Image (tube, rainbow, N blue to C red; front, top):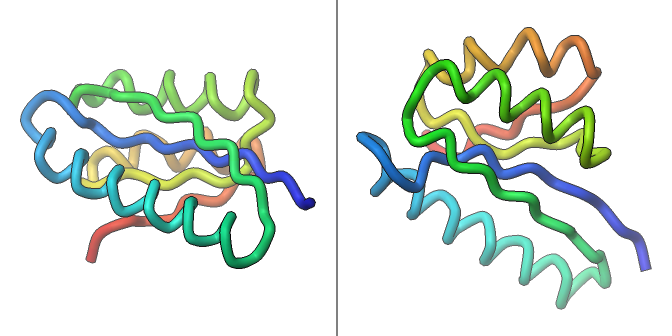
Length: 100
């Protein structure tokens, strides 16, 4: 079985809590579906930046440095992605944007 660690950087509290909770539910559903259909074990590591810009950068860095994560799902707002991108580039990680 193939194992993958994924970071979920979604504010489930704070001003974007409703959007973050919906995005987290969708991500968890997709993770469960992939595991059942494809035999992939996906270890999801969720962090809640609480809609606070200063937390997106530090929480992203923590996931990438300490959890061996190379794929992140998150960044509902453009400013949150702007805080995450320099860290993602430094670690060679990929951001998957959950909303359109």
